[in-house]
Amino acid sequence: MAGVGQGGVGELDCPVCFDLPEGVVHQCCEGHCFCAECDSSIEPRLCPICRDELPERPIRNRSHEARIAALMESSLMLVTALNPHIGYDKASQVRPRSGESA
Figure 1 (cartoon, helix red, strand yellow):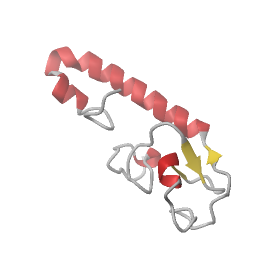
Figure 2 (cartoon, helix red, strand yellow):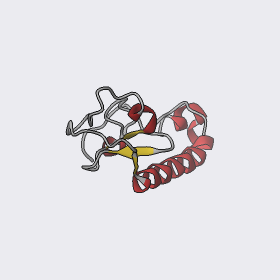
Figure 3 (cartoon, helix red, strand yellow):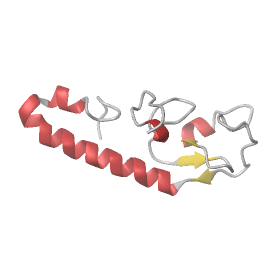
């Protein structure tokens, strides 16, 4: 994957907060994705990647949301599998956003 932000998953990270979006993901007309929360705080209303004007009505990217949900689900299963062998603290570090409750 392309560059990796704090969320640890690169292309899925929000370019505004550099973390893995939770829940709703918005995009610009060119398809650049970011957290819905970050979208509400972007001023001026320009895409953080291409600098095109953001649409007045947000465009939701359900495909991006589904990929993030699948990643989180598989990460949680991995944490559960590793827990008896290396302990929860170390196993939870495998998750893209370690230390958060699911």
